[in-house]
Length: 303
Image 1 (cartoon, rainbow, N blue to C red):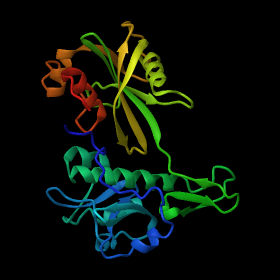
Image 2: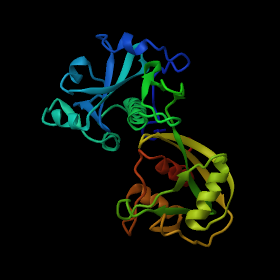
Image 3: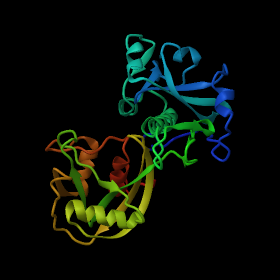
Image 4: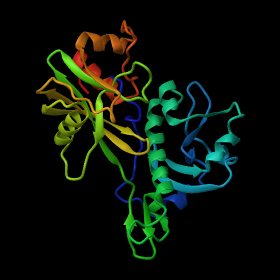
């Protein structure tokens, strides 16, 4: 079974030790693989497919580099993620040997092997955290990278800061032969997807599913079961996919959250997944966990 984008990641993370000197030891080794992110745009070697794993020469034109993080090893090869200025992307655009586009497009177009999408998700999320958290949340002093890039330390108050991941519930809410789908105004025309929302402090996954469904659509939910999860590096979320049982049907849509929400029959969703809905309605693409939740409900597929 195909996995959602960013879910396959063969990286050996070395998370237990995160050796403080690993970055210095591996940054300039000839065999090190480099993942280069210009602002939030990955720089790829072009090919069929291309690759996100660059050698040192691939970094040479990027100009000033702001952060390096030792991510771990890939089949024994050190992997280092590097943050460059957003303007660095322009230095690669005219070279046919490179591909410069956003990470979502990389996934949709299959520009790198599936296992490299997980590496890119890790690089983008950690580097984005560095870019957004340069100052101590306790005292406001500028922090410095530590532990090969997996921590930032404050020299003033001694606080240690670690990369964050934001958990999000995404749920296929079903009642008999029908499921509840919604759309936001930013979606492609005619596309409907599963409802989703961030977990709140001290909230269980099950309660978050129930709360978000009621807040957005006015539908009550009973039983909730976990299906699968997906890293979503925009900027750094974990999508927790669930299938839930609705205990009510009447809709009361929050129009500030959703442009529309409605019940779809199982046969109708199958047509949406196949791109053959008579009204031109569609479902999310296979890169998204919502697609896999819909398939699981329609065809009883296991994660």
